[in-house]
Every structure is written in C-alpha cells, then in structure tokens.
Length: 350
Image 1 (tube, rainbow, N blue to C red):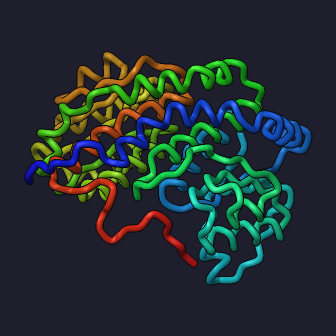
Image 2: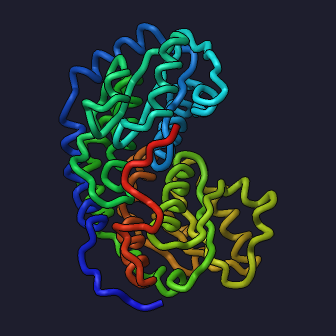
C-alpha cells in the first residue's frame, strides 16, 4: 500500500495532549472524589456494574480489573439491550453503577443508567461533556477534562478515562503507593508518547489480519489497540487473553502471522511469556511491547516502553506508546486515521 502525504493528523496531535490532559484531570475535582470515596468506604457497595460502549467500554474493563484485583469488588458490564429491548427491571440495591462515555449522549447508555438507579444503584458518570444527558442522570460526575477531541478515534479521552478510574480506586483504598505513582503519570505518559514503535511497520503495513495478546489489567488495553487497528488501519485485529488464545484461536497461527503482545511486568508476566514462546514456536511473528528482558528476548520485533511506574498504571503507558504506531501505520496503508470509513465521532445507539 502506498504512503500518503499526511504529516500531522488530529489523532497524532490529540495523542500528544494526553499527558497534560491527565495532569489537569488529576488536579481537578479533588473534593468531589474525596467525598465520593468517603461514602464508598462508609457504605461499601455489594458489587459494581459498568455502563459503556466501544473505547469507553474498554476503559470500563480496565476499571473492572482494578476494582476486583485491588478492592475485591465484583464488577460486571451492563448489557444495555436488557433494558432498552427486553425492558427488564434490575435489582441492584446499594450497587455502584459507573458510566463511562466521551459524549454522554447515547440513548441506550442513558436508559441503562436510569434503570440501574431505579433499581437502587448509586451512579457515577465519567464523561468528557459534563452537561451531557448521562452526566445529568448521575449522583456524582467526574469530568474527564480531555478537551475537545476531533479525531473519530478516541485517544486522549480514553487515557483520561483510565486515569480517572485509577484515581477512583487509589483514593477509595487510600493507596499511597498508587497515589504517588499517579502524580508521576503525566511525565511518564510523555515519555511513552516518545516511544518509537516503527519497527513494527514492515510487518504490519501489508497485514490483513493479526491478534493482540495480553492478560489481566493489560487485556482491556489489548482490546482497545485491536479496535484502533481496525478503525484507523483497516486491519482485522482481534484481542485475546494470553490464556484464552491457546484454547482454540491458536488455530489461526501460520508462518509469519503477526501477533502483538503486551507483556506488562506484573503477576501475569510469566504466563504471557509462556504464551509468547509457544506462539513463536508455531511460526507466528512475535511483536512484543515490554520492559521485561525475559519477554523482549522472545520477540522477533521488540517495541520499547518507558520504565515501569506502577503495575496498575503501566498498561496506560502501553496504549500511549501505541497511538503513534496506529497513526503511522494508517499513513503507510494510504488511509486517513482521522476519518475512518463508515464511522463518525458520536454513535447514538438505542
């Protein structure tokens, strides 16, 4: 595919804004978050439920991993059609409902959050438009402070949603280590934005299909990366857990099949490395993004990441590093990352 003359897409510019936008987010709404987390500690919810679609649902999935792994709070993702089409009444007395959205305008998300509140849930909305319908339905609103985002592909708003969820959990459990790491997150995101993933371009420029593999808190990031490959680069990229991929999808592997692995240095690293080694033995071309010497040694193509910050935050650094590759790969494939075909910025589903 031919190179285009694109030099500075809105996606690329907005990606570079993410560190400063996260800094603004972390400096804002401190009293409101403190009040919310005091309430949550005083009245612990029996479970949590997230309300989101698309990139925001991937952010909510990251939040689920934090809530479950760091607070022990069972968390599920709401299925909006249960409310909008099946008209179910939901019994969720005392639960925490977390809605995540860029626009806060989609009717099905609003209907779902309204139904959860009617069933007894306490509602928190994380939105980039503070006066949106989804925000007005919530008991507490956490603005994302991402600023206007013109590229169809969400970047800075997605990263701000991840940071907002990490801050919620850090404040809730009064985790000094995580709170200190959050203070350093903007600078580390700036370092991640400078990561050069161009070594993957020769492998991916003509690729028609690939998989993105991760595990644990990095898995929702793999889901988001796969989505971005699809929408900006028209590559049929599918995300899989490193464990789940070995059960059936491994049949996809053939010589030189591209596999992008996110190998974060946390409790899942050994399993991810084992999967990477097994896939390499089956002929896949392993593109590995990691700071781990062990993981990088298994790569055919190794991609750099900044030094680890905190196991809960390192997945955010990985997606920041990835966005530059998505923009450059779209150009290499003759595409405009800002204008994916068939898509628009706000999708209103019912």
